[in-house]
Length: 103
Image 1 (cartoon, rainbow, N blue to C red):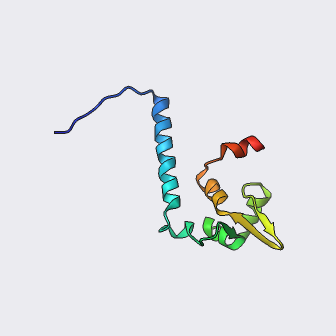
Image 2: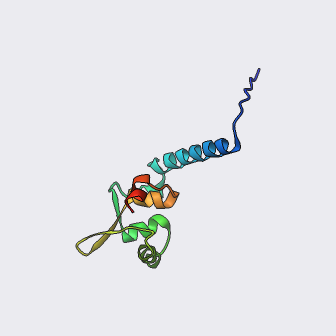
Image 3: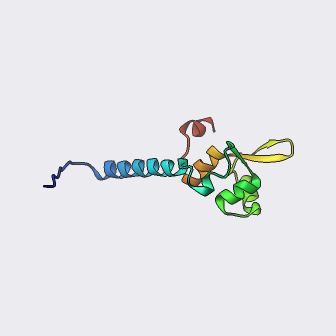
């Protein structure tokens, strides 16, 4: 026999619940090492070329995103790198509250 439970929940509470569950599943998906494109290297950072492969876009697009402030590169000598954690935030649209407070 199947049991059913009815609860009262507002539409806003339901939307928030669904949104939080989807975000958790996306983060689990991103953390899955079997996913090829998210596990390009074991390093915490990616080069420009690796970043372009990560997003499946051209190097020109990566340069454009840097100029528009979408991506935040850091340089070591003449090399440009991107933090993998920031790329996941850009990819999944999850913003860090502390990062927003700093701006």
